[in-house]
Image (cartoon, rainbow, N blue to C red; front, side, top):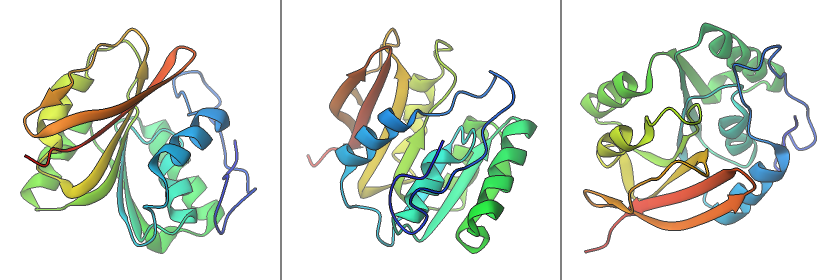
Length: 183
């Protein structure tokens, strides 16, 4: 796995030894970042289910100001921290060992807001819909929620004021983009 663009372009990051962590493939990651466009300069990023840190690190490489990484797995947190150090992104990052629902609650209570939120949970666990209810509180009004999920996962078109505006399939993987509705 490698960083595709930005100041760390071409640099490899560490990958897991086990199959418990499912990193986003370079092909899907490149398409995902093309879908989002040039919204990274100065952005505040949240990488839920951080895994290897792949998506948040790519964002920092592309100019994001800061990324908070969250994962409940100690192995993932260790890997994220190693990759942050490998790229020299310590001052642009913070890593938390926590489950996603608790993290969303804590971030909301701290009144934190993010320009881009990546949500790439384990597939086929049906944990995405409940998490969508807390996203609106921490997503900037022009922000984007990027959800990577299995093709068999059925996600709602709308939760509160958060609406799905784009969906793209890559084999068994789907990228769904959400934003705050303008109504």
